[in-house]
Image (cartoon, rainbow, N blue to C red; front, top):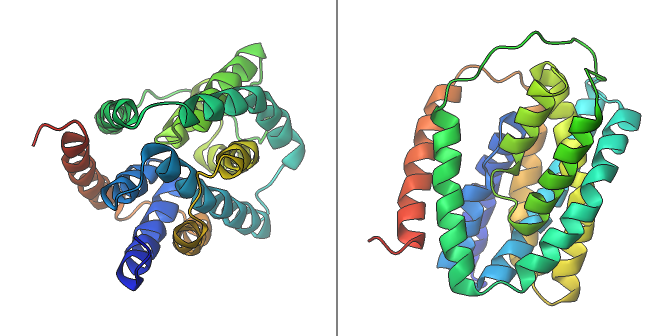
Length: 249
């Protein structure tokens, strides 16, 4: 499983995934199936992928801060609400059977594609890192934490939708908070996977080298050009992997 070819491939996929995750979300739809197709069981793939997720978001946080886009006080308040859900979700994931995980992953990946194709409703946005906070946001954070601890795939889309529609934040502030929140709840979930022996650190660090680089670049750029092309390529790749995971071909 640990070969130079696999390490190089995971670095390349990690680079793309890190860039996509900060820009929008869904990068794990490239990495999780790749790890499973390499022969990893579901919990090991799920845990290994989180090494890249953790360092990717740390890189993005530092990049946003360098661009003077940070408000750790507000980000932390929302991130704390995700912790109970993230811990519960991770414990649930490590006890799920391999076949059940593949089926759920395949269905989630198709759901991610559908969400990418749906038109976005426009709302009146607030050009502030605080936005329109209410109790609904913290309930959403708890549920997103559970999903992130359990699956991770597509959690960026859920966070972006919550911060966009509930807080009515502009995209720059949405992404600023998103990377901090994901980084924060990934810490306990990765710890659970690691303590149960479900992390391949060599391949995880290969992914992390790619995701950190991609995340740094993505946070630096206001990405508009090329987004449609990336979305089309992602949709095709995700559909192919989802069909294979579901055993339809």
